[in-house]
Image: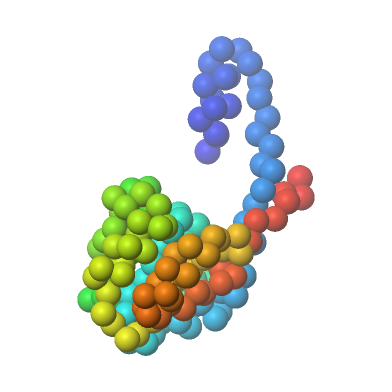
Length: 162
């Protein structure tokens, strides 16, 4: 499928080339996949970016767990809190069948406040994140005594070899 910008420029007789400057390298997938397969060990999930949702989808595909996800894992995670930052991330989380909370918070700091006002679980919240994530959310949760388990590094930006 052609990039929409290249397609639009083509309509005006211009030729463009898309050069990707960064790509993502997904790390520790087996470890994260194992955690994702055991919702009973967690109080919920935290997604702060579309990339984090991509990691979940990749784990399900690579480990052939899509059917298990549909039949049982999804419902087990839906019995818990699934927190997200932003509507774009919420939309992607909804597509994998999870119900979300906190999408209107707007940033990690406000989401942390939302989580702190609602969470009482002694179980940690599973937080798939990249190597460049900011520490605001994990620090605020820790300061309030809410356990979190960063599944990092989940993904890391890499210079595109092209």
